[in-house]
Image (cartoon, rainbow, N blue to C red; front, side, top):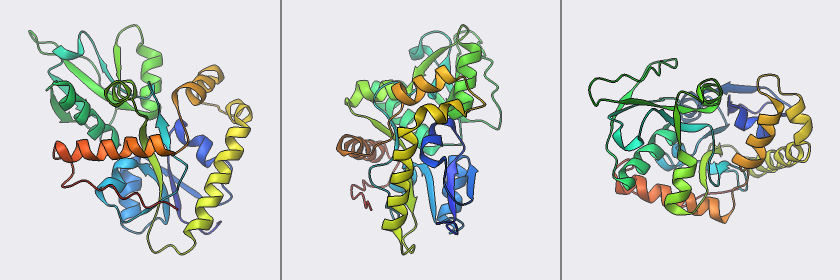
Length: 261
């Protein structure tokens, strides 16, 4: 396991899945990890679930995900005024899962703001020119920090909450994916499941060691907003997401075969 080339998203939500891994870990944004996994620079990575839908060559580590079954807190559209009156949303390029989830939710709810890619940094100064309104998609630690600093200035359209309203299912943001040529996939998957179980069993210790975010917030975030399983409801959520992405032409065709180990 120590020689495994393993990558993990660099967000607070991933820490119960990677804390204590015995070898080196490459931490990066989801989009960067997806590229490195696809180019065979990594053997295993915790990346956006959309990466599997787009490129279903990988094996999924069963029973583990980063999911929510309702409000997720850290995948949101920050806006002012009514969400239905937003004319433009700046997208975060770090996660294709969040971007395509937003596209699906907007399409299914009949909203049609203009979606634009942004560069680095949070520049959410809502521009109003007549009736024009701008909003921004935020994910991960950046979303958490922005919400905590600007809660009185902005409203937050929580994508996990909107998905739950639409489907009554959990939404899966990230999965452990293993490249097809890795020979000991089952052994790796077993180690990752064991690590997750140990960290969740000792969650208070993990929270106490957290230096960036408040312990009370971390406790709520891990226990109320996030799920770390990948059971039948989560898998059904992935299937529905796949079908919606295909319906709205974000994927060429549905892929419903979840190859798990």
